[in-house]
Amino acid sequence: MSGSVDFFLKDRISEDSVVEFFNRHIEQGVESLEFPKADAALFLQYFEYDSGFHQSAGLAWGLNDFALDDVVLAQQLAKAFSTEVLFEPQRLNLPAGMQWCLARPDGSLRAVNIIELNDGLDVAGDAVLIESAG
Image 1 (cartoon, rainbow, N blue to C red):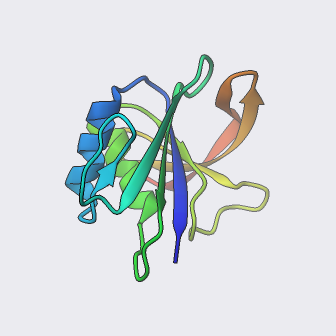
Image 2: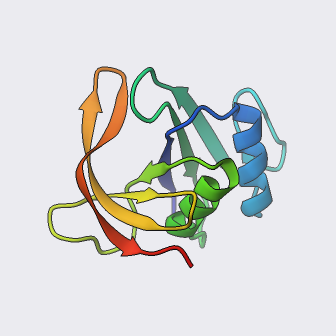
C-alpha cells in the first residue's frame, strides 16, 4: 500500500542532512531529486518556506507491508536537529478539534492547531501536552 507523511521543520536544515537522517532511521532507504539512491524505496519531497516552519520534508512510498511510525520519527527528527517538527499523525488520537502534533527537541509531543501563512505554516493558539519528555 502506498503512503505519505509530511514533516514541517521550524529551522532550515540542509537537504543532504535530512536525507542522511532518514537513511539512518528508515531501512528501506530514502532518496530525493538532488540526492538519488539506487535502492531507495521512499522518496523525499523537500521544500523551503519564508514564514513559520521554514521547511517541509515529505516522504512518499509505494511499498506493501510497510508501516512508518511518524510520531517516533518526528521526535527523532526534532532531537537530531534541535528544532520543532510539525506533522499530522497517521494513527494517534488527538484531543477534539486538533489534527496536528508538534514534536519538540526535548522529546515532548503536543497537540496543536495550525495557521496557514502566505508562504508556510505555523502553530496557532495553545498546545496540549500529549507526551512529556522521557
